[in-house]
Length: 128
Image (cartoon, rainbow, N blue to C red):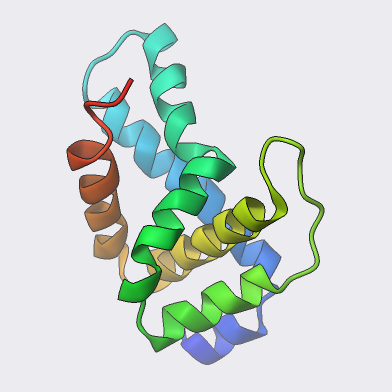
C-alpha cells in the first residue's frame, strides 16, 4: 500500500490490523512446532499481550525507518482506552508496535519474519 494512502488511514485501525497479523505470525510459528493445543495458547499469549509487545517495541524503536516511526508516533498519540492489564505507557507502545506491524504487512512482510526470529525463536523460546 502506498505510504500516502496509509497516512490517511486511522492509526488505531492500523494497530487493529497489526494485532491480528502479529498474532497470526506468532501462532503460525508455534503451530509449526507441532505442540499440543493446550500448550499453544500459553506460548502464544506471552507474545501477543500488551506488556510483551511494548517490550519488543522499545527494543526495536531505534531500528525503524522514518516511515515506520511516523506510523508508530501516530498510533501512540491516538486517543485510546487503556485496559487494566498494563500501564498506559505500555499500552501506547503496544499500539505503536501493532501499527508498525500493519505497516510492515503492507510494505515489507520480511521484517515481520525477522522480528519473529529475533524475539520469539532466538529470544523467547527458552523463556518460561
